[in-house]
Picture 1 (cartoon, one colour):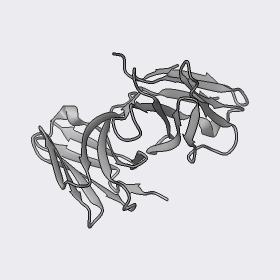
Picture 2 (tube, chains in turn green, orange; picture 1 turned 135 degrees about the vertical axis):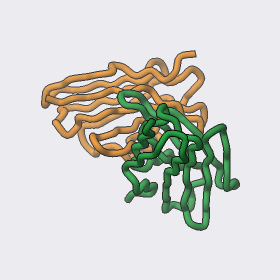
Picture 3 (cartoon, chains in turn yellow, blue; picture 1 turned 30 degrees about the horizontal axis):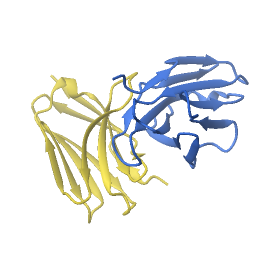
Picture 4 (cartoon, chains in turn blue, brown; picture 1 turned 60 degrees about the vertical axis):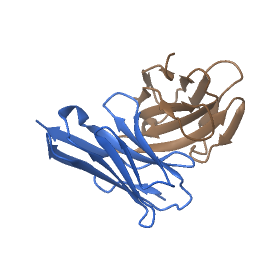
Length: 108
Length: 113
C-alpha cells in the first residue's frame, strides 16, 4: 500500500533550467508534506515543507506547490544547478511516509 | 550541537549472526524513528519510539527484528539471525516532538555475506 508515490524514478535537466519533481499521495489525513534530498552514502537532508493549509511555499530557488483536491505536490527548482543532482524524496505526515524517490541529474 | 549519530557506518555480518545498529538522537530530541532503504527502493518506515516506549512498530518484520530506546543511551535496532535480504541501509531520524522537525543520521549500511 504505497500511500506516497513518485512516479518518475529519474529526471535529467540542463543547468539553468527548471526542475519539476512530482509526488502523489492517497491518504487525505496527511496534513504536512516535506521534500528531502539525499546524496549517495549520506542520510536524507530536509529541503522544504508545506502545511496542508497552504498551496505554495517558497525558499530561494525551491518552491513546493500543493494541490489538495488532486492529492498532488510538486517541487520546482529554478534555476537548476549541477550541485542539485541527488535523489529527492517526497514525504508526508502524520507519520513520515516517503515516496520512492526521484534521481535528479542536472547537466552542466 | 551534533546531529543524529549512527554507528557503525558499515557493518558486515555472516548469515545467522546478530546485527546491532545504534542511533543517538539530537540533543533534546525524545522521538526516534528507524527507516530501511533496500537497494533500488525508497525509505520504508520500520518503527517509532519514545524513551522506553515503542509507539508504532507497524513497519517492523514480525520476526528477528526488535528495537529499543532506553532511558539512558542510544536507540538500538537489533536484527537476529541475519539473512542476505537484510542487507540494506538503515537510517535513524529524531525529532523533538510527535510531528515534524525530523533530522536524519547518515545511516548504517548492513551487508550480510
